[in-house]
Image 1: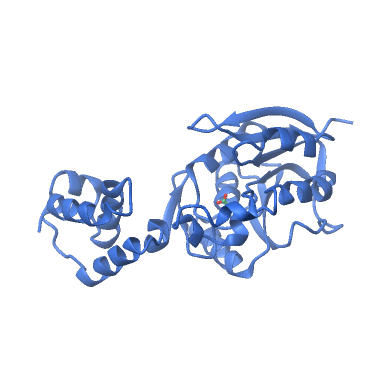
Image 2: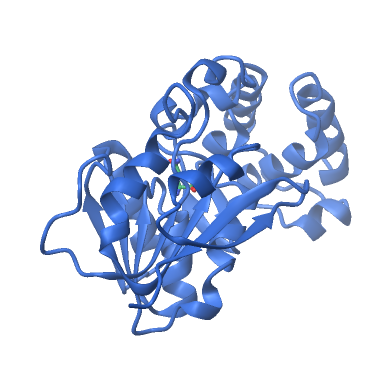
Length: 275
Ligand code: GLN
């Protein structure tokens, strides 16, 4: 069968569950039939169609399993990341969290990524800056994925720490030039109203307590002491949380807010005053 025909048939089958069925069909073809995008656009003859695997994938997708978990891998900042049901799927807007402080991070910097999950933020920062990055993650199942991603990306300046950020950091932790975090920030009650696909992501990676702000409060009370004077803090936030964040982090200097591609305030940046 030809690639274009296969892509069309898959698109039709996926359209009941996806607004971007054509994109998803192409992702499945690239993954399962080892095709490149140009093979698909040039309508190449597909030599080997692993029909069973492809059919299982389509059935899982029709049952609302997210495409990223079916593929088992997803791209973030141009690098590959292993993903499964134990970690949040890396989102395009989280790339803004990686990018926002790149100019302030040097090779000699010490950076923490709190609630690291798949490690997409920590690993990207380590690769782009060469800084020492600590990826802090509570759950062993997520840590397993994180370790695999460190190896996959040969991120040598990165260290994974198993730690619950509702606890203060250890007294021996190195002081930070920069702390980044995309913590769970959705209100607990809202999680079950989200798209079926999103609900298959770990509840613990999505839910931030009754008002969604529990982890920001934990960071404010436990981690601002870890920042060096002049150190930076950048946090991804949910829609409408910007003013609550400014209040929670009023002991730091508010620097700026970065909006995402939908013009929603998405990243808030603070700085600890030089003493
Ligand atoms: N830091 C990871 C990400 O942004 C995980 C975030 C989380 O689990 N809340 O994808």
